[in-house]
Image (cartoon, rainbow, N blue to C red):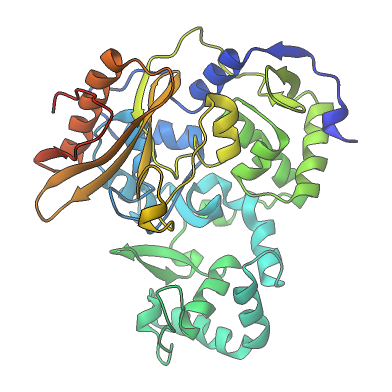
Length: 403
């Protein structure tokens, strides 16, 4: 059964869909005055995972979604959730790209680990390395077993990287194959370097001993979780959240629709079917104010962001400087229910300055409202990052930020 062939039961305006999506992502609630461990946990419960990325122009990608929803919070609380031996509530794995994922999702991703162990579903070079060098991979695993947590650089005869930083050593290739297969996990990070160890020495026994659902059930539950995190979504939105395959996601979605776990709806301006989480909140108004990372779940799927906000976004880090339209590391600025501007930001840590290198208003943005709101958010993020000054490079926007 093709789930898109199911007749929609309701019609949502684009404004309704946008508010449902923002509420599902946690932007309908006021920021706490003093964000603590409980607030961090609630955001992680809602999102299920946060993406990890090496870009550190402003702040590491996994820290930003919590700031966008909570404001200035203690980043050590996320580190604790990810790597503290007794307080760990997250683990690293491939969810939506490399991610920090709630521990209770570990059983739901074991099918992906088993496929990786069979050489399926991993990056081509990693899968090929596992097939061509099984003895070497086993030797690397034996080192982890015998010596405890190790980085790629600490392996005996791990080899050196080749070419750019993307050129992994043989040891790193072996460790990443083992990581994909779930045979090792991340024990800690040193700087941004991953330190690997056996899952049984890192993850709680209750998680490792939890029963493993079959693939279909695990995928259904992942799609349900994606729907809860998105509120209202297309098939492609749902499968993108945990990067599920087209055929399996379509089959699982049809099963969920048939069971009444997702409601087919029609959304104004969207082509094709959409699906509503039955318990999704439907606020009448949202008053958000947030700088949003390019790696935030709200912006992961660029086509979805364009459907929701009329906002076409492309990250330009890898675009030559003279061809960039908006800047190197541009953050959308969410104001109310719309994306009102894009801001190119950089943390100059040596001089303790927040650099506003570019600022572009979106069509229809109200400068009298936007200026004070964005200025306040810039002051908040500068304080959060322990930056003493905000330096605005002259822009053509003419916006008064009050900083």
